[in-house]
Length: 150
Image (cartoon, one colour):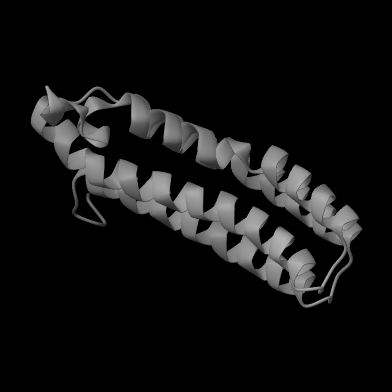
């Protein structure tokens, strides 16, 4: 009996997007609390570490499976859009975290010492989000467009 009639690819994509949306929502709430001075840097660090600990195994496994699946050429070309979306999402998360931390110093809303600690924490804690998506996107000839350059 099928509860939700859909293809395996759509089901996988839905799960990946649902998990990523939940992770991003949790991260946004934590950032909102921290940037609004509702929590201090130690609480932010603990919260970010906990989010990473909770989500890394599941999102990491989903991403590894998703990116390692062998596809026919036409399927790989269609999957390039999803790879680009994941690579962009990871890039936005990574870069916004660093840019916001540094912008707070430039705009005189914070000091450089905590900002440096924040970007070190963000970089090390969120690397598992960015690395697989970027690696797949640039290594896959269909995703990066290299196939068309030949």
